[in-house]
Image 1: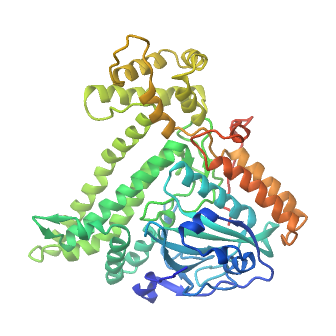
Image 2: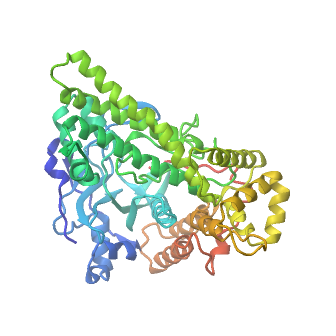
Length: 530
């Protein structure tokens, strides 16, 4: 692996230099071969599980790595904390993947840092396994996400009310630059660091701003660059949340310190999957007031982008026309960012209805009368699902299947009433005209639906079942030193992941993980995992 460390060049104010805590007996439990291949990790290293356990625990740093803990602030459930930072994570550096995209390599659960406050800096094994499984599932489903390269059992016992086996996750992400990173410097009035962070973020994530974007064949001004950066970050968040909604993912803790500007899913602590459709559904035990409910995620992303806009205000004021008074400069900057934040609503709605249109095989989602009727069709279906307490994934899967399965079609017509016939009428109008007068086939619509409606998701009760199997075997071997312990964990997780990595096509084991929860997840809760 060829490490580079471009983030370190921003300056010491962006991080603390710190090393992972060494552990006594690390054991490699899970290794992501596909991801390792994409990162150009040599085969001789991949075959050396002892070395991988040393790297994955933080006992030994790979050549070229420089361990740091990142500084950032953040709004947590709406309340601002001016200093958070990596309290149990160590960024080792960056590598270029097969697509020439720069990726952060970070250890999580690797011990205390200068940002740990009263925490022990450790991670329990079950949350580590959850992150590995969920991030791979989201990747296969097509949602932008960080991923896990490995899970290493540390051989340590950690206290989480009960004694738990410890673990370290190696996380791979396009970057760990958060809205909270900008907030950290904005709260300190450090505009020089803010500008450096904007420049770095543009170069790393939005290079088109400097290479493609021009006005009257002239490069963008400082003011225009900042606004283009904010607009690009907003677009990434819209895409991310719409993909979450498409597959029924509830993040559970959309704090600004968990919102990365590259638009990937970060932090899988209290996340869950939507079963019975309910736009107000919350599973996280710490989301007491439903701030991050399934249907609120789009609005929260907008709120988070408004906080990013707040941070950019001083830079826009500095870049403004010097002939204006200071008050006029501030007013102009406010008008500019407010325009972008307000545009979010329309941009999100377009992406939202386009996504649901694809889930229903509808290609025509624009602004004409037909499109407006299609939007109403989408809204009416979601209302029906809410009233009938329909399973989210299963409903869209059955709609997909019903286009070529008469029994399914009759069942859904009985369940959904005239909505089902309204939908078929729209599909007939959108299908290309055929020479034959035979009954329409809905091939185009069904093909579109099959690409957007998974046949299987990582359902909450299956996740818990997998973790229960792993924790049962761990209970008799907390250090995970026995080969039999590693074998059970590896085989149990790998069987599940084999299915989850084929979410749009049924394989031999798919049916095993399609079963709905008996109680509809009525009493299910997730926890932070820290």
